[in-house]
Length: 437
Image (tube, rainbow, N blue to C red):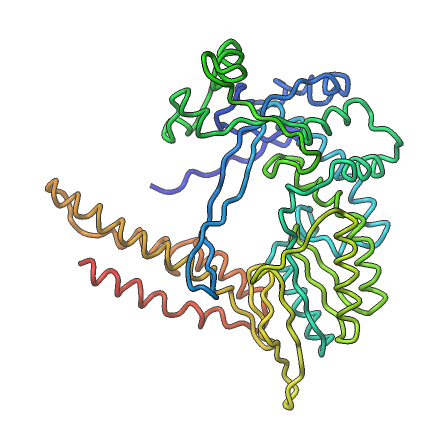
């Protein structure tokens, strides 16, 4: 069976409306008219009592080269109720219009890459290609990469409020904006696993969820007060951080970083360099004589924003781009940026990304082997479903890693070694299938 085709978005839907069907404390919203009276009314939003977020951890495997091991990298994510999400998305759109005008008027739009609609549309592939092409044209130079530590969790609420007021052009936030500000800074949350366990919600039941997790009475007695035990609700009280995963958090991250982006873009222009920020990933490119000045300015700007740059392995890099005697370029070490590696001459997909794809392929083969043995035990067809594996992991499929992401990257980067980088995976897949059968 093919994938279910995604329904086209009705043109009459407002920009803020995005229906979801995940389990939460309120009913999923099917059409805008259910909540338009609330979302588009400043008076109603000013007095809205926002429901707790639901928190969970999303864990990814990360390779630590120095120790030759995989470690778990958890991400703390929180998602709002269905109605609250529409409100937060609406205010994100309102602020985004003003934010885009500010960065366009101040000439810093080209420095801010993430969480923005661009015309024509761009993704990390285009951003990396633009950076590598700039480096090629301006070599010799030095490329510095940085990663902000605990990005969303570290936003100082007073500084965030100041930027919010500045983009609105007011000295005090309007009541509706202030209530939204409180909802995203002084919020409460419930741990997803504990909540779902209490109400018997399994992974299977989460699909196509169509009703509130609990009744208002159950929320008061079992969630807020906990009945005979303790309640499930926790509250944010430390004066910093916004929940990663909410509809407004991405926009607020760009808003919060405005002072840093202003200073670093101006300095980069003065020194004929380049400053780019993709969320919490920062790239500085400059001549060697300006390296210390640029990096010191970034450190000072982050300190003023009450943020900290990572010092850990893989979180910072200094790549010297030089010209070889034959006129070609060399980056030592290769520059790792937005999922790609640039050695001065060609571009490759980051090795960790390829390794992740190969792990998924091997896991899928093992699963197919197990399912084939189950079918054989039941007297059914014992053969491994090769066609399914080919569709997911080779050029015979559509919009998988090979025919989607890797193909798009090959089309964008003029000089790349991506095809050669991935050519052995077909042989490995066949070797795994031979072992299986």
